[in-house]
Length: 337
Image (cartoon, rainbow, N blue to C red):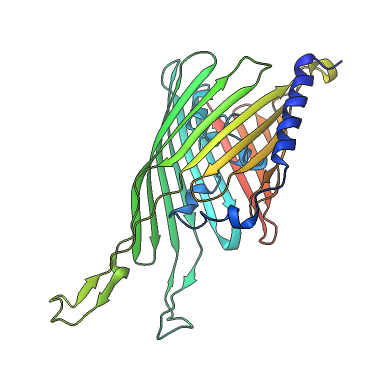
């Protein structure tokens, strides 16, 4: 028979799902903040396990794969971990992640995390040459992050990171430093884990560079050029609140099976509140099947994923349906040593 904990978990997540499944706000109230921040690529998910679970990783993220969602995830590394992922995103865009983390002491953890996005080649157009000048350029986005995590008790872990971000568009660029903070707390109530994080906290950013120079009469400026001053924009601050529960299956199928269910509420500063729900089934912690969905998101919908782990190596993949856009595929590999 199912345990009382299993029944309570089912009722809890069913109730939360029914609340989130209610109709979203009317469009006039739902889109007032869209396109009010810069560096929106910072909101692109980069953890393959989390992507396969509908982005619900604030509480269920583990290791380097979960660091994007919550820096406290690094405090689950057993010894050392190396991680790499590659994603074929929308419209020919690709992004990759490479990371390394280690356990410094029994309670202290450190990691370095690099995210790199390439838009693919685009042709330069100008007013005199609207069909192209014959030149090409790529939009390049980089996030280099240093992560620190600490296990305060057997139930509470915290983490933080500092990120150097840079975006290059032809001959203009933007760069800055932003910060992430997060926590992971085992409530002790029916095995429910609570995760919270705030991402991309930092100053407003501004583009600069050669591409903003315009020719002027030498009488106005002896150099013959003047620099345009662009408006400053905030970076996309994101708040996450997540819940995770491991549903007991031992009484039904034996201890070789595990089912993890998770749910996140996500509140970006430049978008409406949306959610993510997901689940992961594990057999002997070697074979994994994942699924999830994004709720109230304008494009992202159902996601699927899976993975296999053998000794120190793990391989993962994820698929996301973006509706009228197209599907995306992500692949990841991690080494624990």
